[in-house]
Length: 440
Image (cartoon, rainbow, N blue to C red; front, side):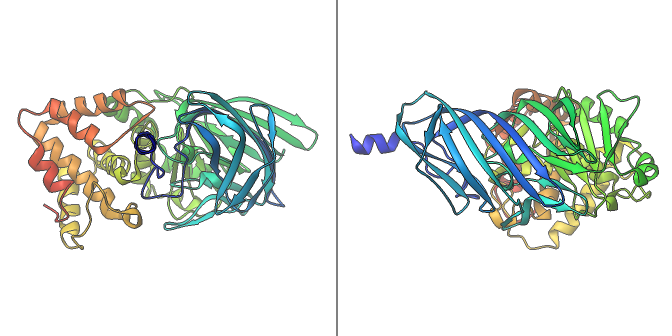
């Protein structure tokens, strides 16, 4: 009996690339975050209310939470929990009695501290102070830097985010802005993200931003940026409405009801960052030269590929980055730049000159953000497009984004779906591009 029970139990590790993240024992449906942030002090205090259901019998559960934050009180289903501990990036909660499979859970965590980025294989990720304000860049494991969560891309949930901070700052978070209430020198901002969203795609942006609504857009596009950058923005980001129209045509309907927001910080950022319904750029990406337009296309494409359709395992990261990179090429082709054939030829030559040791379908944790994943992923899609033809390729992308909308998928799901659009076997193409290290 014991062996049988162990066999049926969920795996201890949700993802081999981030083996310490997540808890397979429960599924979260909703997070409610009530936060207070003091910018000058970098001081965060908050209450997180987490609604979940038990997937297995539970005597204890864990939440991912940064060591920089301290938990003062925990309750589960209305009862205070005295036995909890925080260490090694985990909040461990021992339940008073066994929670059966299928039982509802309401977990309330009171916490606070001075948030800071989480150190990872890929550098510092998560909550980061700016010169004046703060931002969150959560990919892949930075969500725990500012709220307790079940931090894995497959664990999607709805979010209600309420933030109080000094009134001189604007707060931007995911979803629809429900209210903005001034109280003396502080303002409370409340957002609702209704579509199921991975924790790493939840963001918080705080700064001295002015809002600007783009015109003639098929989807509402709003920008938040420092006043000094408005002129540069109007030039550098002017073609976003056209980008949006193209991507809707190629990828299917824009997946979010609350529109799209672009944040440009007053600080320099090494790379732009995607979040659900939001893209974050640095002042260096808004310099009046339009030199970052491919990155603007890349981040917009992530709203379909990565944010709506999310990889179920981090090994399948090419489903995010390869697709967003190929969207850059599609935009270039559409907007009068080099076409996809030209770009594919150039990047193919570069990849052939680099080490031939990366497996696209499983690049390994250390290399999952290697530029070769981006470019080889895009080349894989270009090879597929040439094999299927443009009409079938576009139909496949629309089917993919519709079938897995606000859900998760893995490489096998895509290769299986693509077979429906081919007149012959795609196995040789996948063997060469996905499952061999040598660049074809």
